[in-house]
Image (cartoon, rainbow, N blue to C red; front, side, top):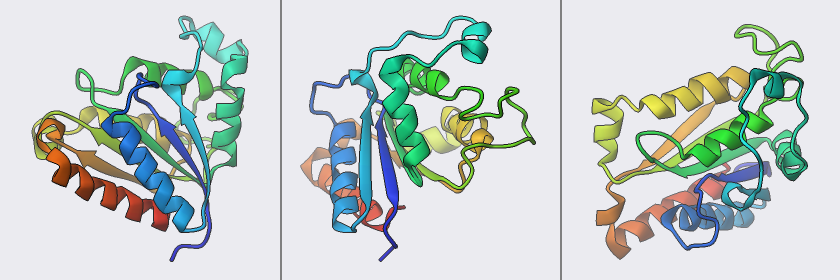
Length: 197
């Protein structure tokens, strides 16, 4: 069993009120993490109220919205971050992208002088997993579409600010899973949570 870790779950589904597969997967991971003795925090992005950034000046010199301070604190606290989201129009939902843009500020996620690919990475020492649900088969997304949006998140956001290693879980053909298929995925996510992987 993995030694206890501090784990942050980020639910990136825009709908914070309904019961959907992303929430069920996050719950299964959380249950496994609790059983494994890990500390856990959770951010539900769809339940947060924050503005979108519209100018570079806001990102570089503006202040973090007060509603996102607890989220930024949770990222700083975490040793392992798990991001859950559904694939919408081939990418993460806009609210999740807006959230990441807001919290990844200079002085927190990138150096105080802004992003430098080979410079200081303030969030080094943290690992991540990205869990993506989608209507298409996962193999089609990975091989035909080359998982471009996932690779962008891993390379241009998470890896850029220091997360490593970064693992992924792709849950495809969600409309065809049925109860048995969903149950198998919940078991897999619970196991990953127990292992803090």
